[in-house]
Length: 402
Image (cartoon, rainbow, N blue to C red; front, side, top):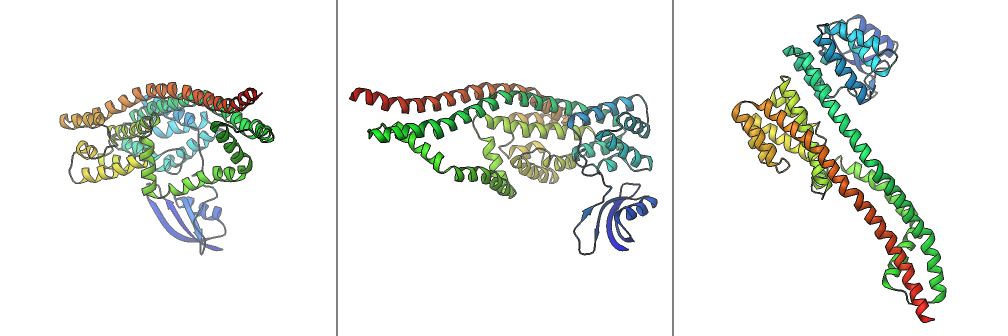
C-alpha cells in the first residue's frame, strides 16, 4: 500500500485535494469514482506530480473534428434534444475515433451531474480556455445552441484561413527549397572548381569574383559551424522567448517588419476581436473576457498591452481609452470600440471589429504573397546571375589576354 496525494473534482465541478492509501493509481481512481470524484493528478511522497494513468487530458483532436462536434451540438440542441442525450448520441456517432473518446468522456461526466464546462476542462488540448468560458456562460444564460453556433462559425473561418495560408505557402516553399539547393550546388561544387582553375592561371580576378570565391570558401570549409549555428539558433531563440521582456520585444519587432509585419499584427488583433466578441456576447463579463483573451492572441506584445487594458477597465477607465494608450491597437479598432461604448452596443462593436479583420486578412494574405513570390524569384535570379557574372568576367579577361 502506498500513500497517494491527489487532486480531483466532484460532481459539481469543484476541485478537491486529499490523501488516500491504495495499491496503485488505478485502485485509487476506482475508490474516488465510487465516491463520485474524478481523478486529475496524483503523486506519492517524494515524487513529482504525475498524471493518472487513465486520464484523458493528453488527448488531442484535429481542429476539423472539433468543428464537426460544435456543428452537431448546435443542431441537436436547437432541435430540443437535452444535453446528456445529445452527447450520448454523438458518442455513438463518433465511436472508435479519438473524438468519440472525448465525447464519451463528456457524456459520462455530464450524466453524473458534472457541468459541461467542467467536463471540458479535463481535455485542455481539445477545448481551449475560450471554449470552456463560452460554454460556461452559455450554461448560465441558457444560450447553449447559440454558443456552439458561434464557436463553429469562428473555427470554420479560422480553419479556412489556415488552409488558404498553407496553399499559398506551397509555391514559395518549393521555390525556396529549389533555390537553396541550387545555391549550395553553385558555391560548393561549381565555384571551387573554378577557383582551382583561376589559381593555376594566376589571374588578377575582379572584386565580384573574389567575393564569390570567399563565400564559397566559407561554405566549403566552415559548413560544420554553419550547420551547428543553424541548429543552435532556433533553440537559443526558443529559450530566449521564455523571458517575457524579450518575447514582447521580439513580437513587437515582428509587427514592424515590412510587408509581413502588418499581417502578423492583424492575426493577433483578429484573435483578440473574435475571442472577446464571442465571450462578451455569450455573457462573459468584460474583465474576465480580457483576462482570457490575453492567452489567446498569440502575440506577447498584444498580450502585455491587454493586461494594462484590463487593469484600466478594472479602475473604471473605458476600454477604448485604455486601448488608445498602446500603439499595437490601430486607431480604426479604437474608434469602432469607442463608438460601441458610447452607444451602449459594445457587443455589436466587437462583432464589427471581428468582421472587419475576418474580411481584410484574406485579402492581405493575397497581397503579401503577391509580393513575396516575385521577390523570391528575383532573389534567386540575382544570386545565380551574380555567380554567373563572377565566372564569366575572368573568362573574358583571359580571352582579352590572348
